Image 1: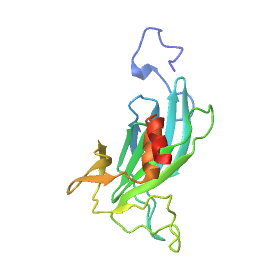
Image 2 (image 1 turned 180 degrees about the vertical axis):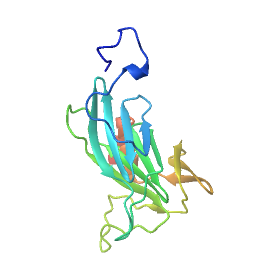
Image 3 (image 1 turned 135 degrees about the horizontal axis):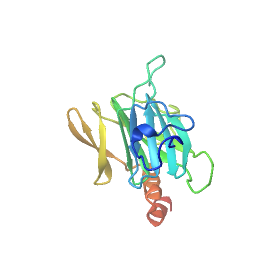
Image 4 (image 1 turned 60 degrees about the vertical axis):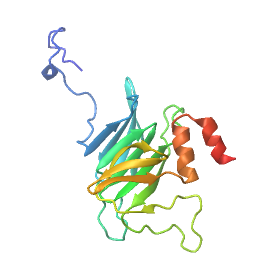
Length: 193
């Protein structure tokens, strides 16, 4: 907001002041292609905002890259990227996908579903006696500081310290989520039926 004591035609940034609470200094920030969704990373936590001027609304927040073993420190997020409405995040040795719930509902907190796509470490199954068939099992592969690039040949292309890796996105839950986020409802229905 512009200070009232300053002349009306002075557009210098130094003449403006903040209004309301400020957002803490983030580690990473990523916008979607339309400039509507904003992902802000603080350590291993991601907060997703919807920018609908004049409102900037928090849709939800999730801890994405937690420590995989008891007592292990959480891993920071090192890469964030929206691709067709889906947020992909990576830690030092893992890649994750975050699906946003229904954005059509006004003034509601959005459900965030997070899945690990790939990891350099073994990831324990949810129930070792009867693993959940609906939850994607992460690909165990060599990942050293993966950075999200783009979709390629039905997979997610990431750049690592040792070269490019193509991570499969073939699990039905991942396929349906990516198709729905891209508004390809008819293609998503083919995976359901």
